[in-house]
Image (cartoon, rainbow, N blue to C red):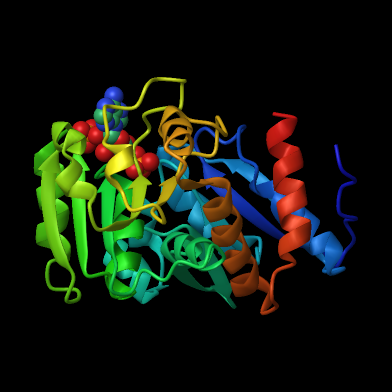
Length: 289
Ligand code: ATR
């Protein structure tokens, strides 16, 4: 357990709203950042049940919180209670960060930008690239919007329920010049699907409990293809294990978790985030979970 931030009369609180919330690693990461930069802020978890969300948002103003992060299951529903939204938050219909601007609550979504930052640190620019996304839930939305805005050429969305993938294509067809297509999960066995892929992203929850990933033609991807699993535990999902066995590069969801948090930190503080301190704290928190 790391030392807590010191609380004084000048401390301002940042929170995270979720239900459940006991598993969150964000307090470790954000408090490490506040400590590293000697900022008078403290980050605390708030267990907010769905029926209490409106009151909890009101409390951001009442307690003059600096802001909050928002996690499952509130990311979509909190939108209606906020005063202003960023372009990403509007496009995704979801908010993961709220900034309290003197009582005016601004909702942003740093998930997609965090995802792009984690690609950038691996030297991958999605512009002009072909991507395969597996999954069509809430996290896919942020990834998809960010890749379209970054100028990907073609994105194939594979999902168990193909109708959900089609709904995403309908929603974002006109957002950019990216060609969007949908396929069923069994098409993941087809080598042709991957012949020009620069990036394959798992946005499903398959692997969270150690389950095997559906059959996928890992070896059919170009050697430089990056396999990205949004899950951050277990570190080695079946998806990432198989990608490594095929000698492809991999990234797990800790990098997106880190960068979405770093961007939120900058929104609240106006300062660049101390990435190394946050990385260390996040890894420590995940190890001791
Ligand atoms: P998140 O917000 O993390 O994206 P979600 O919205 O619940 O979570 O989406 C979960 C994703 O994992 C969905 O794409 C889901 O597929 P369906 O749309 O068909 O439900 C996918 N998923 C979950 N369990 C799965 C399984 N056993 N096999 C294949 N896909 C699965």
